[in-house]
Structure formats: structure tokens, C-alpha cells
Image 1 (cartoon, rainbow, N blue to C red):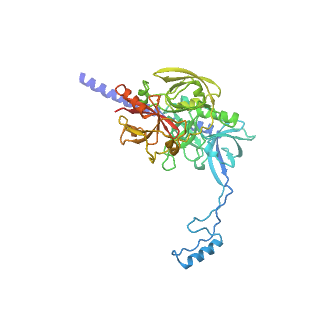
Image 2: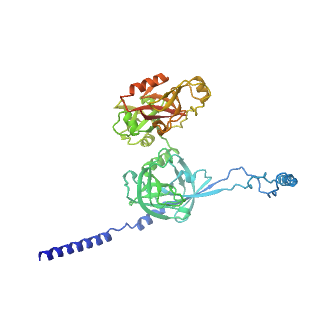
Image 3: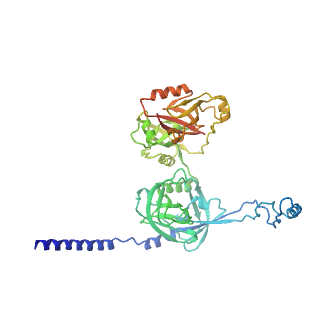
Length: 490
């Protein structure tokens, strides 16, 4: 009797489990996007641009001269005959008249006065811009401003039509796995709606210095550029900008500029017609585990200062090469590439607090942010060509050979007078130095944050470090680009 009860109880439990599982799977349904799409489509536009051909005209098209064996008596005759009639020289491609080109992208309306956001690459070099509303109405657009570094542009149209607008959402609040909806005009197919999820955040695709893309698997194709990426509330969380695709079509890997970045840029384009970015004046690099260990930092984070630009806000505030910027204006610099964005978004002339790691302890500094301007690179040394006798020596502990910089070397390698240090002339294969990217032509300016100008100084520091530390920190200058490199001591 007891056995039968247990048996029946087991069957009943299984039946209940199956019942709930079946009903639960039916209860969990994907959201219906139809009402949301219907509401948002009128806010999305097509952006059609015309790119005018330049005034240079290639050679006029004309008949090709017959081909004869070299040295044939007919060769010169026909060559002269066709060249007198404008035929191109033998082997040249047939000439072609340059024509205007057209391109198309997407955009979205953010203001009833006719302000429209799109990508910079959609309108770049355009001689005319036409915005086409969802109902087919065409309007001429004026470019208010654009920013190539973030690939954003702001347009304006004049119309009495009541425009439907969208509002910005907070991209900082989105999570991987959240629903996302893209609307645009892929391949000219207007009002196309695609749905997916947020696949990843803070993607760096080497598109610019402020990369912080949202990755989504909502289908994005050519023509979607400049269109909006929405959340389930109908707020814009991103501007669709790029795709990864071996074939040119969507493979489910699309990228959108987050609204947290785009909104600020668009506001500046509206107010000033250009972007005004903050500037600190430091050259930075990633803090690796080896570098963190060399500088006494418990974990690898922050931005390592390779150099402070002369007369920059950083130099005036006392920031030095070898400092690790851990916090900027109350924001933790969890990784190097976050710092440029933090600085760029800071109001010009604003004084902020910076926390740096120096001499194995934290130090607070105050710095007044300036406006970013174009930075000129310093022309430095090239690959070493050994044409004269060098005063050089092997550093067996690092598997490199170094040489003192003479006036002759400066002249041949075009090394500016203000750059001092020791020239690397050889790097041993399969060494730690080679694996870390050290190569002949690099200049070692500092060893463990101590300037070196002679081989004796270099070897003296290495001798002191042996037995005390496992590695050595080098400040390396390569053609004006300065970086710290941590090498293991043998």
C-alpha cells in the first residue's frame, strides 16, 4: 500500500511539473512591437545626399589603337593617328567623364523646429542634402554642424508640417540582454523596423578616440546609418553607425553610438555649430599587469601618463610621466580609454580634481581644463642604419643592445635636440623585449623613472635593481610616440 502511494505521488509530481512548465512557456511571450513601431516610424527620416563631381575631367573617350607586335612598322603609324584624335597613350585605361554621386542614410527628428540627427559619414562632402519624411515628403536640409571624431551630424529643415519627435534615453542604464529596436532605410527600403537585443556595451572598434559603442543584433545594413536605436520605452539609446560584416550585409553585429555620448555632441552642434572638447594634455597608455607591478599598484587599472605636453593643463598641474591617473573629476578611470571621454566632456576652463598614483601612493591634484586643439606629432628617429662607429653595449639582462646618441646619429636619424636617452640598436629574437614590441630605433629616455643619457648610467641602475625587483620600467620614445614598457630582468 505504501509503495503504491509513493508511486502515485511520483506520477502526480511529474504531471504537475509538466503542466506548469508547459503553461509557463506559453505565458512567456516576446513583446509586441507593433504599437511602438507605429508610434516611432514618423520620427525617422531618410537622408539623401548628392556629392558633386569635381571640375577635373579625365581624358575624353576615343577609339583605341590596334595592338601590333613591338617594332612593327604599323605601330608608330597608328599610334600617331589615334593620338592626334585624342586617344590615350597605350596601356592607359579608357577615359571617363566624372559624374555626380548620390548616397542615402537615415536620421531622426529630435525637435519640432526641424532638428535632425544623422551620421557625419552620411553627409560628408555633400553638395546638397534632402530629408524625406515617412510619408514621402521631401525637404531641403541645412547642415548645422558635424563631428568626424564621433561620426555625428545635425541637420535642420524648414517646414510648416507638424513634425513628430523622439526623445533621448539614458544609454548608461541599458543592460546586455535588453530589447532594442532599430528603424531606418536599409538599401533605400524606407520605414524598415528590426528588433534584437543589446549584445554588448562599451565596444571599441577603432573608429575614433571616443569609441564606446553599443553592440546589437538588431539587423542593421547599409542605409541604416544615422538611424535610431530604441529601447522598449521608445527612447533613443543609440545612433546606428557601423556593422561588422565580411559580406557587406547584416550578420547580427551592429554598433550604435550611445545616447549618453551623442546627446552632448548634438547639443554642442546646435549651440556652436562645432564641438568644444576639454583638453588635459597627456599622452597615455594602458596599464598592464607588468606595469602595475613595476609601479607598485595592486591591480591594473587607470591611465598611465607616458608624457605631459609642455605648457598643457597637465604639466601646469604637476602631472608627470609615470603617474597613473586613477580618478578624474570623481569618476574612476577603470581603463585607459575612458579618460579621453571624461576629459572631452568636461567644460572648458573648469577646475577639476585628479587622483594619480605616484611613488606607490595616491596624490590629489587640481587641474584647469583647456580647449582641445589639434596636436602635432614630433618627428623623431627612424630605423638605425649603422654607417658610422657607435658607442654601444649589450644589456644581457634585457636582451638588447644600446648606443649613446651622438651628434652624427641625431643628424642621420633626425632626432630633435630636446630628445635625450639611449638608442636601441638590436633586440634579441624571442626575448621579452621583442615580445613587448621593443625594436631597433627606439630611444630609452628613462629607466625606472630615472633619466639616462649614458650606457654607464643605464647599467648602474640595472645592477641596483637586480635582486630587488623582477622587472624594469622603461620610458621608450618611438618617432615621437612615448610609452612605458615593463621588461623582465633575467
